[in-house]
Image (cartoon, rainbow, N blue to C red; front, side, top):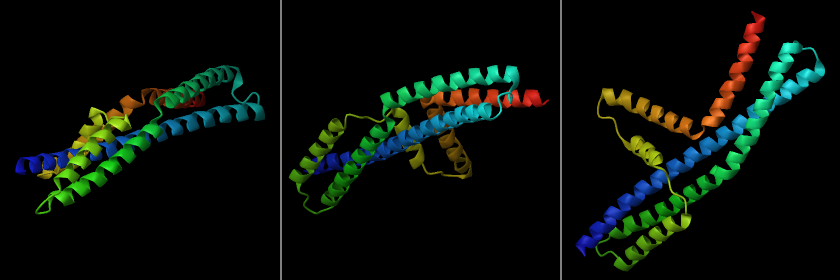
Length: 208
């Protein structure tokens, strides 16, 4: 019986890591989804602003400016369509919700198992049922977290042991999370850089 209890204690530890990682994964997906919405909003505002300025003053940009911003508007319009299609295909908000709910259920079973294992005479049948429910719930969720999500979770749980790690850990965590984020939404970042950068360059160049 003692070996079986050790098995369930180890399983509780695994469940804790799984739920924590899935909470982290759900949060990361939510951030990416919101960033994608923000990207679409910025591009839409850009297109509306160009249209309004052109309607109010047809020669506001001049001949060269009209061509430049016309081409930039086409790029922004195409990317709005591309990002929308990608968002629909990825369904980040749906995946985030499923992972979050799965993490909550894992936490509930984990707490119940912790209370049972702490008893002088644990109910082994109840522990077996919770373990089976955990495995079935993982399979039924049909969504898994990525290795990077697990890495982010592990980083967040590491405690600094000295002044060097107190400085290094936050820098490392932020850098790794930012890198994972940028890799996850490269098209959004690229189009924002192109549109904002090109607009800023044109305005600065023609003011000078």
